Image (cartoon, rainbow, N blue to C red; front, side, top):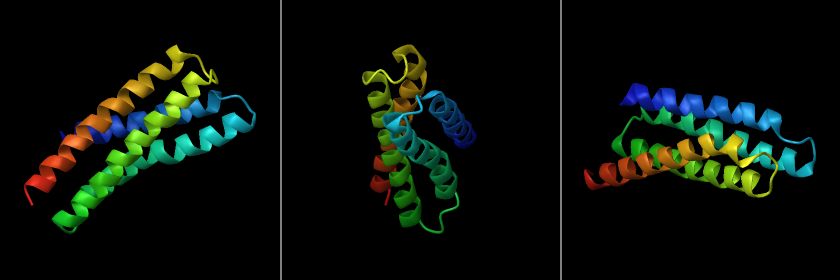
Length: 116
């Protein structure tokens, strides 16, 4: 599971980088792009960091950040799609993955907190 999640979070980050490069070069495109790059790349970086946690509390804390960043990425992707900055069909796969990862990490946080 760990390798799969590492790969999935990295693929999401790469897809987001590509999507952001396709955004219009206007204020909305720049601002939403900056937000999406930050949250979308943070998912993978913080997931990797969570795997090196020095304690259970640190693991849960990092995993909670991953959950929040994945959910935030979904929000920015929804705004990009609904504001028609990119076609819905272009955004849909990344949004689906962000939502799936949010659900996975939410379950992982709940389980980790339950096992504390």
